[in-house]
Each structure stands twice: as C-alpha cells, then as structure tokens.
Amino acid sequence: MAQMLSLPKHPGPIGIFDSGYGGLTIYNEIKRVLPQYDYLYIGDNARAPYGTRSFDVVYEFTRQAVSFLFESGCHLVILACNTASAKALRNIQQLDLPGLDPSRRVLGIIRPTVECIGSVTKSRHVGVLATEGTIKSMSYPLEIKKLFPDISVAGKACPMWASLVEANEHLNPGADYFIKRDVEALLMRDPLIDTIILGCTHYPLLLDRVNAFVPDGVKVITQGEAVANSLKDYLERHPEMKVKCTDKGTTMFYTTESADKFREQASRFLNCAVKASKITLK
Ligand code: DGL
Image (cartoon, rainbow, N blue to C red; front, top):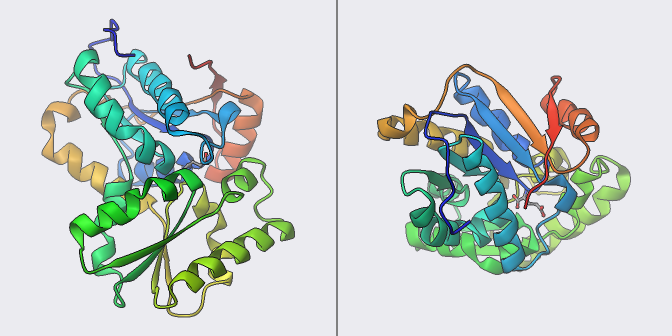
C-alpha cells in the first residue's frame, strides 16, 4: 500500500474494519449515535481470529483492509479491532498514510476507551481482558499510564474468546469454562480491580457471561459507546472530514468468508437483516 493508489476523491462512506464479527458491536453503537452517515464494514472472517497472529501479519492484513476501504471511497476508517489498533495503527498512520493520501484518516479504538476509564475506577486498579496480541503489545497499560499515571493495570489474554464468538459457540455452557477461568485469573493478578475493560470488540457478546463470574462492585466496561461518542466529537472538530463522509444512512457489509454465513450471523448480532458481499483482500 505504500505506493500511490489512484484513490477516489469524492465523498464516501465511513469505513469500519474488524477481523470478524466483533466490530459489529462498535458499528452498532456508531450507527446509534451517528445514524445519518453511510458505512462500509469489512469483517476479515476468513482469516479471523487475529489475536494470536504476529505483528507483521496483523499489520499486513489490516493494511490490505484499509487499502480496500480507501479504494472504495472511504476517507475515514475506524479500526474496530483492538488487535489491529494495537499492532497496525501506528505503522499505518506513520508509514502508509503520508504516501497514500495524507488527508485520509485511520483511527483506532484503544485511546477513546482509555479516556473514559479515569472517572470510572474508584480503587485505581483496572483490569483488561483482551486477545493475546493486544495484551502482549502493552497498549492498554501504556495508554492508561499516559492519561492516568495513578492507575495500575493488570491484563489477561483470553485466547479462546474471539474464536467462540466467531464460531457462534459463545453462549453454550462449554464457553463458561474459558470465561470463568480467564476472569478469575485476572482477578487473582490484582484483587483490588474494580473496573474491567473488555478490550476486544468480540467480547461484548459475552458480557452477561463475564458478569456472571465477576464479584459485586466490579464494573465491566465495553467500548462501543466511548468509541461512538469519540467519533462524533472527532467529526464535530474536523468539518473538513465531515464533508467527505456521505450521509444517506446506508450500510454495506463485506466479508472475506461466505456472504450467506456473514448475513446469518451478523443479522443475529445486530437484530436486523443485513446485506453482505464476499470480497478478497490482497
Ligand atoms: N475483535 C478483535 C479485537 O478487538 C480481534 C479478535 C481476534 O480476531 O482475535 O481485538
């Protein structure tokens, strides 16, 4: 993607990208807060999960998706995936955007999530449940320390959780084994935790199950609302970007897996019928 592409200049939809279905939890909130815009969603379901993949591979896959979204007319892309935000965002912003089109923007979802945490935790002990890639990147502790140096952060990777959601097995009793195990391991690392960030966009689908294993008084935070409000604020502060986002209220869903499968799963997650098409990323 580093070489110049001939990108469409006219306004286009806002791009939203995730490794799979998880980004729908972010899309859902964005659509609720900003219903007027057009959206183009890509789920790279054929290559999900990303959580255990290397830095280089996550960067390459994310770059391909961003490139596809730019070529499809998006000027603004949200990486609705913590793993991609942790492992690819900085490189894309610093290495790819300047050569491609410096006026386009790619935004991640870790920063907006972290910004709201300072007013939530009373004990100043925060836990993060996320993919192995996000936890190993240390993105959450680093971002939290920048904004709230007094907060201590413990993280626990949940290697099975995104796969359970992708396979639609997350509400089956077998899933509880992994959820309980990982929640308890996190709380053992720091028993003073009073706030847990679900730092993977697949995890809101497990929220009820996570809450079942968390003691009273511990808040479990999902990201959608913070990301949606932050995008709203961004567009208000950047009128030059706002005019490049079309506003007919439509959404197009793309998947790298079967379109039928995506339609069925996504309709269930979003509680409404969706149209989807299959694409190939390269
Ligand atoms: N939903 C993604 C995230 O927020 C990635 C999950 C995965 O593909 O492992 O991290």
